[in-house]
Length: 306
Ligand SMILES: [Zn+2]
Image (tube, rainbow, N blue to C red; front, side, top):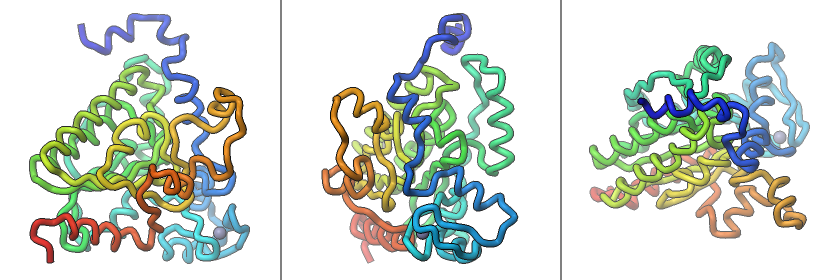
């Protein structure tokens, strides 16, 4: 019997929630009131309009201006969602990036009737195989393994495929003795794959541990939003943890925490700035400084120096 059969034959598994309330809330509360929600950014991309309004500062500007400015509002610095391809294009030396080959067959362990169609439609819409994009490229001459999660692909949720792709990237970096940079964006574990999603937390964490024991450098970059099982596994295991400004970073959503502890949460709770003050994040790096910051860290940790 295959592992997945255990879940298919258990009818109760379909009616009982497989994720904790915290995980479910993290999935349903991806964005905040004052930063770009992935859906809003979708509207920016899909709409026929040539101008747009920043949801944070209400300034109206041309969409081409936003595009030229790395999807950052030129007036207030609000960081909109950026596609993995564009992020990679901005980060790496021209023509140096090659995607890692890691094809993971589709699985539907809970026999969710709409799941396969949903994945196929997202693959067509985003051009991505799954919620994480992995490859190797040079950042200012330093060859680096790069993983970028996409919040537009089922809220960047981690199922079997994401777990395998991230693990594969760490194993590749370990084998080739390369540093790795991971940009996280996730609502947490993927509910459609039940407990098998939660197992990816252990799998990816073990891959990071092995890589780390062999002396590899892992730089984690937390982007909006990084929550749930991804925060509770590889996202927070970096040797150096960076974050984009005002990114939501946490495990459970603020409502669940307030109900659990019976207290009002402080201002700015679970934002990058709060996380730096409390030692959870090493530095906030705006998108236009990301390439030079990563290049500096890579140079400092490189044996060859320059
Ligand atoms: Zn703005």
